[in-house]
Length: 331
Image 1 (cartoon, rainbow, N blue to C red):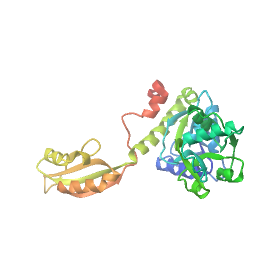
Image 2: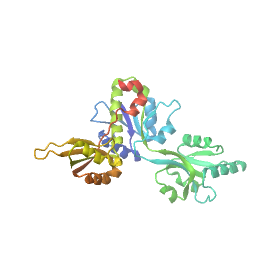
Image 3: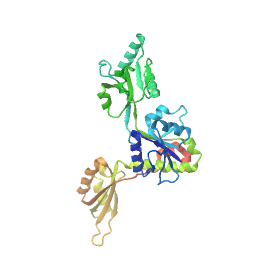
Image 4: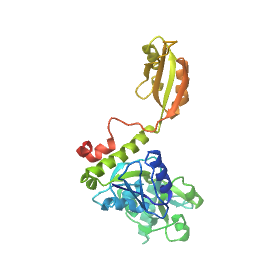
């Protein structure tokens, strides 16, 4: 089974780090090689492709799985939608596809203002020119909001200079923080966010359905990614508490339901030759509640409190895998 990953650019390093965190470390002999392996899962071949080409490679069948930006999927996916989004948010590569106009356009702050301006241009025999690398996404967004009078200007490289250079009136581009836009005297429009994007996992379900071996390998990758993403917000807390019974310990911990773990505490007797009234408490807690939960356990009489970050947290089934592959997922 083949998985297409970004070969360079902003998503390359983040994707390699994400794969490693999922237990799917990628082996690439050198930066000039466009193939690699995942040693922990024999049979998986990695194809390194330009981020813009990953969707096409999955659709045409060069790879069964792929990692790319959600914006790239929506822009480049063909009408038959052979590339299905398997995990929509891998929790990195976040950005927004936005519309931005020159700061000097004092009266244009919203999409409705832009619609009025486009009509004014039309009445004057002109067209509003918008520079973008994502014509499909932008055109659909504007048409849906009743803005029909504009011309899209294909652009590559740093398009923030387009209005100042005079070959476009405004731009539609990706931004992570908005800093570059502001430094080039551009401002985002209210209601001008076309898409919130991030890295995602896509698949070719038709291609996978014809090979049980490829399907099994795809399941391994999906399960590890999902398990890692689900575990990321949680820590496991364990502690020893002295009490007369397990019921006493659990009721004390459950006095604060918000700090009693994902499903509640697990309580087990600690077998000690000298003292028989000790119990071990284990619970899953979110990162933001970690110190508060530690204090709660201390108030319950706990000592030896230990915290460890989870690597994986698996549910009763892989929702993404079963939703996409249906009955094939069972086999």
